[in-house]
Image 1: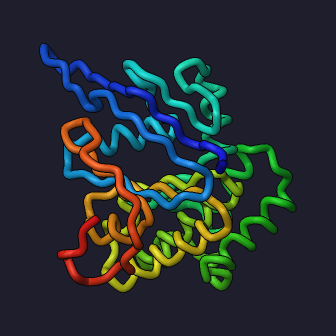
Image 2: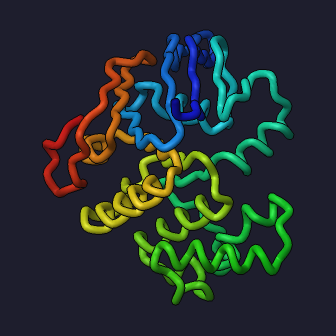
Length: 241
C-alpha cells in the first residue's frame, strides 16, 4: 500500500469574527497517498483555502485530526511545524511571492538556506531546479524582468528544490493566460511523475479536471471525492471534474 502523506479525520475549523462564529470546515475527512495528483475544488468561501492551510501546516484545526507525513500537527510546536513545512511541503502560490531584491537563483536557493544546506550545494541544486523548469538562462534576472509564466516557473523551482514529498499549489494558474496555464499544469504533471504528491487548490474547473482525483468542498463539507481520467487543461470553460 502507498504511504499516506495527508490524513484528515473529522477536521473542523471555526473563526470568531466579532459576535459571530464562522464555521469554515465542518468535519471533513480524506486521505492522500504518496504519488497522487489531487485537486481540491470549491467556490469562494467554500473552505478550500482553510483546507489548504491545514495541509500546509499554516493553521491548526479547531477539532479533528490532521496528520502530515504521519505526524499530528496539533501536537507539534511552531518550530516543529516550520521544520515539517520546510522538509515535507513545497508551496506554489498564485501571486508567486518572489523577493524582488533577489535574483531568480537566490529566490530558489532560499528554502535550502533555511534548511541549513551549505552555499555550494544550494547553488547547484537551485541551478538544477531552474533547468528542469526551463529557466537555466534566467538565473541572474530579477523577478521584475520576468513574465507571469516565468515567475510561476521560478516559484515551482523554489517549491521543488528541497525535494519535498508534497507540492501544495494555491490557484497556480489564476493569474496566467490559457497557454501559460497549460504549460504550468504540464510542469506539475512532470513533477508528479517523479513520485511527488501534488495537491492543487482551485476554483477553476479546467484545473480540477486536469488531475486524476478531484475533491469538491462546499460550505465546509466534502461534496464529492472522485477519481477521474485527467482532461488536458484547455481554453474551454465548460470542463468540469
